[in-house]
Image 1 (tube, rainbow, N blue to C red):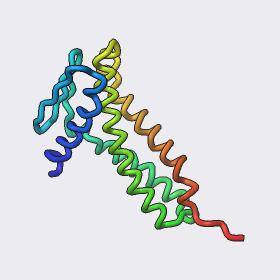
Image 2 (image 1 turned 135 degrees about the horizontal axis):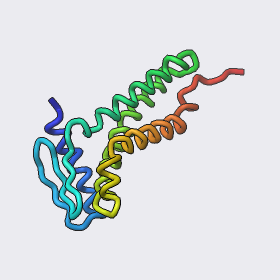
Image 3 (image 1 turned 135 degrees about the vertical axis):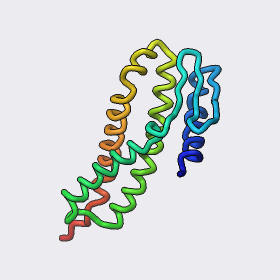
Image 4 (image 1 turned 30 degrees about the horizontal axis):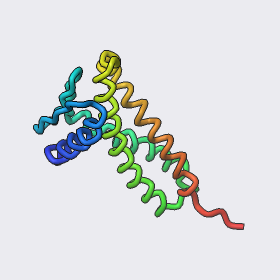
Length: 144
């Protein structure tokens, strides 16, 4: 139900970044926002809206909780969880922007062929980096 509003926020965020790198970029506001560049037109559909990034984060974070539950500070884990959701949404904006910018260069064909797998790889790298930065902080204090 939130897609019409979230889709516009996502589309406008991508446009705000992409127009600096791709001169002449145009934004078409619709239920599925579209960015129009000189070599590639990108329509942001519901499936690219970042929900898969959230799903990936939640699965990996849940696995971390199951494996390390006894070692984690619960309050800090909750903070890291909500921070991670925000990081994944922001990473999705950068992912779509990067694909749009690269698609409007000589990398157009590669972007068309590999944008789905490239997205999963990028988002997994973001998760691993985020976890690397926050994991020690989530652990319980060692006494003595």
